[in-house]
Image (cartoon, rainbow, N blue to C red; front, top):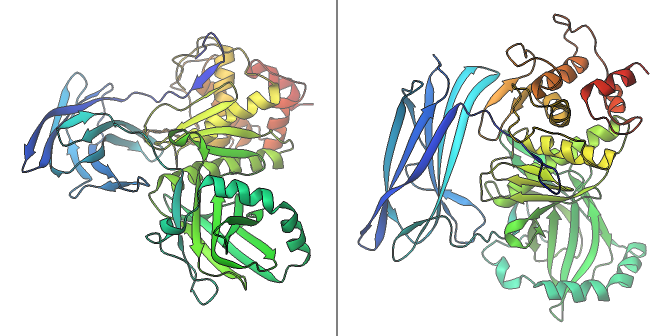
Amino acid sequence: MNSTGDTILGELEPQYFNIEAGIAKATNNDGLWEAELSSIININQETESAIHLVVSVNKLSEDRYQLENIKGFPKEQEIQLKKGESFYYNETVDGLSEGQYEASFKVISEQDKDYIWANQEQLLFTVTEDGVELDWRDDYIPSFAPSESQTSESKGTHSISPEIAPYIRHDSQEYIVAEEQLSDQASDNAIMATSTLTGNWKFYTKSGTKNIRNAKVELKYRDQFYIWRTVGTTYTNTLGNFSFSYTPPNANYWELIIYPQSTFTTVKNPNDGNAVWKSNMFYLDLTSGGNVNLTLTNGTSVNSAFYVYDDIVTHNSFLNLSGKDPGNAHNVIFNSSLDQGSYFSGGTVCLYKNTPGTSTPMHEMGHYYMYNLYGSIPSSPSCSNHTFQTATSTGCAWVEGWASIVPLIFNNGVYTYTGGSTISLENTSSFDNGDTVEGRVLGALWDLYDTSNDGTDTRSYDFSKIYRAMWDGGSKNTFAEIIPFLSS
């Protein structure tokens, strides 16, 4: 959509289902609370496919690193729903102690393997001594969460459990002092290095673990004066590996830290003052170096931040390999507590809890990189309620269509929304016609790229050719303007 200032480009998911959720009543039972959750669900189109409702209830952990499932959840059931009718759901959750909770209501209906209807509604509430109230009282989420050691530990690489770690953790001021005092010493250490520490760091995806690529890693130690000092800083390679060489200092504790940060992007936490997300592991002794293998803790906010970071690395690397550096993107905000509509505005991408594992991070980065390459976002009128299927304007269709081509390439022509809906762009015949339609522009870009010749789709280009047509010669305001550059 267009604001009076910066252009705000937000993704809109097709609304196959409408979901409203709330708390009908709350009752105290011997010091614990019972909350009756209620929801009303409607469908906007008829379907013969089965419709399933999945309800989850989670509590924010005491350390605030992650949400933990309430016993008995998630619950799934098939529901009957027709257009013009409503489905009413009520569920009493008992034994609720004081804390902050999230309830999630997800409706999903698989039309075929590439075409899923879905929507999800998030309900946040807080349980206090006095009752149950909507929303969270405190939205602070720490930017830090510990990693897990995957190393067969021996002397020299013995990690310290997360329970003990807080007692040796430093504060930010100690960091600042240490780094200022050690700048010259770090250079000397590189020359006289006698110990080497190597390692690998991974994070969790929906299907398993994956190497953390191109990410900043720091090695620190605590000296005899209880001051934390920096040994060095490096970056993981494309296999998630890192290495430090150093002269062993006089140390009694060591710390490894990894950030979703590279030379070209940074992912920040808005619920902790926009601090950069990070994970770490403490060690008793790394004097002799060694080899360590680490994995982020699954289910934490930090792991989710690295999940979206990985999509940014993939997107950036793909464009670089396709012929041009799309520029830096250090203003990426990842909010791990709210399910909302992500957006790009004025050189900043805002992503939310529901984005990891979807097409959304790459879509919003598509806007960021267009902004970098063009110097601004082209005029995109009538874009406040854009969808793949409906006509808006040639500018809106071009800006939004281009933003989706890279995630489409990495998911074989299928786009995945944050609510769980998916849609294949192989066939856009049911969409409105013309280059004022976002999905038609995206479908045309996909047809130019994919190797399947079907109907009038008889051309196939390497993406580097399509990408060059996008940026060569300066800004393009419509899809039609890139066509002459494809033949040049």
